[in-house]
Length: 374
Image 1 (cartoon, rainbow, N blue to C red):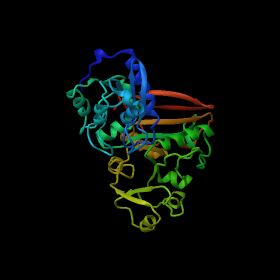
Image 2: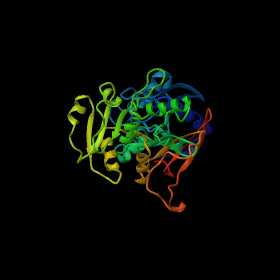
Image 3: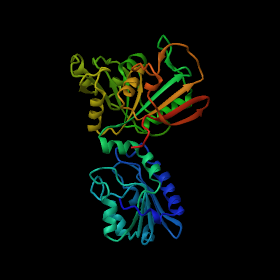
Image 4: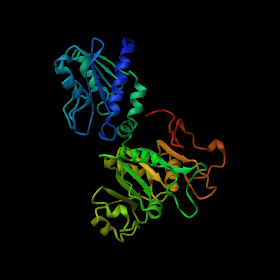
């Protein structure tokens, strides 16, 4: 990276913040590609803007250049991610930048993909374009955590989600859980689904709740792949997931040793059956994530139950969490997290970057399991 941060001005940061806001508009539509925003400016004014709107569509730089038209010559391009210099689903963005006559490029961060990192800015500099990198880099990286993890580890970014009473129970002693949180909190949960490539539950949640696991929002929204961890492959053929498998993808992950039983019937119903090695939690979760990564799942929302969430935490495979707490007390029931017991506070799992939000009386607590961003 050839950062020329000494040349960065407050105006550069203002335009980069605008590019970040534009990038966020592509959320849930570009995976496994990143969220990218771009702004073209000249004489202190915006002359063009764009963002990566959909996977396979034009990149942010191309859209911003098209918006500016002939005014792009001699302008400064602000882009949240280094322009690509390779052929993917679309031509290289560096080519469009050069052909438009852009004289200066300000990048938020270099491309984290080890196969292409640094190639775009280096190519532009060789051909006489002034480049500055690392502007609002932390904000740019925070926007694209799933993408960064996926291209550097080939594993999906894992978010945990649960809805509980104030004392930490996700269901009463009879298994009743509808509804703990209010309608607005549940709508937020559907938004999390629509932003994820896949949503996952364990077989216990499947048997208890018979969930559909779709994103149900006003208007059109992307539907995640629906995944069930079912070691023994006992998912009922009459479950709502199986009955809707031909409408929206359903994957069932079972142990290598699981009996074939009704596997053929599941496949005939449209379900994909994936076999994985057994582990302490019934399945080897790392192997499961590796398999999902091979299938281009870059972000995963794990919704439970408690055993599933506990296993992701115990095996240090979760990246982020969204825990909704309703203003209710059960004083007993099914716990939110059922994992390895830790006898000492010093052995507890630390979390970072805590944020809280009041949602019509419910409390949303979110944060990370990593101190540093990817």
